[in-house]
Image (cartoon, rainbow, N blue to C red; front, side, top):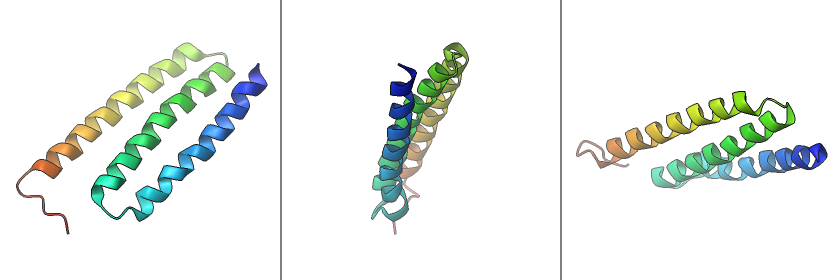
Length: 90
């Protein structure tokens, strides 16, 4: 069973690299923000899988919750910045 979760973690790591292309080459800022949120979501699952593999899921769940809160607050801050009248996308 551990092998399944290990392979899942490796595949998830590869899948995380796909939105990274959109972050680096995204035509607009909105594409980059969406790709960053996709990476953050997949990273949460990856951290939980790693916690399961190390038999310390309780500690890693705390880390994933903190990471999720930081990602959510970061998204809110960026959304607030984009909707401000001073923002002008070039």
